[in-house]
Length: 288
Ligand code: GRF
Image 1: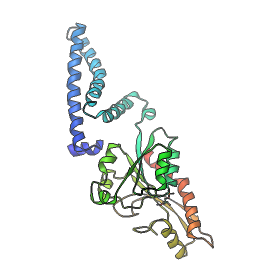
Image 2: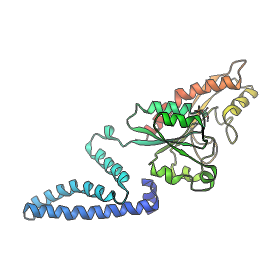
Image 3: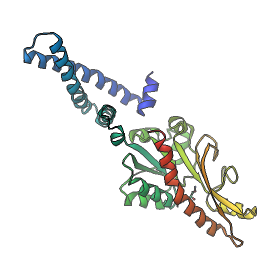
Image 4: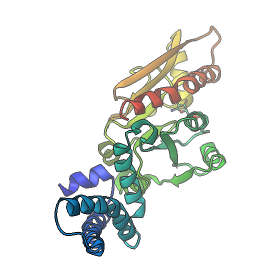
């Protein structure tokens, strides 16, 4: 049960304990204050007393829990949690739908990241909150800086064989992971944690020209060397095998007679910029 809660709330073990303590203490404080308040009114116990007591604790509960969460360092969690409860009861579910928080993993120039960030500025329900990058100096870091988005620089050993940065990602309450030019294989702990919520873009028509080592210019060179007349993009869910998960969307482009890897890369980038942000939005909206 505790593991289920941890996964649902995307928190570590210590945070889970502190959250449960906050619930318990906040609840007791709320009951205590509610009774004090009712004593103060001087109303005798009965139906009226009960109705007023329920109203009092309904108002007091979020205040008590939020107050207790501050010293225990759990305020961000409870602000979000209570926000969700309110949006559920307010009837304005759509307008108050909790924000979906997205991390973009990228290590290249970041042109796709820039398009995605731009696209979601118009969406009140989705926010790009983090750029995860494994390459100091990559163009995508400037894209993040220009847009005031936090960056997490990762190292291979910790990512693959260590903690996989689970803690850092959970602390940011990441709901979705988008791979936009990220070349490392996503480690199992992340795939399990964000099961069905990691999307990648590949610059070819999968299942052709995918797999380990197939990235960037190498993909386009292979397409040209094979004499293909068509290439394109594949947007797909990520599983534990490179470029393998369920394909969500593909778009194609034709190769010219004198096509080079460079000119094909440009065509592919145009397709990516046109479709990737829209497909991400479509998939996220299926869950909200
Ligand atoms: C894109 O072509 C993407 O398909 C591939 O890496 C490239 C990243 O380009 N995986 P950019 O960094 O978004 O400009």
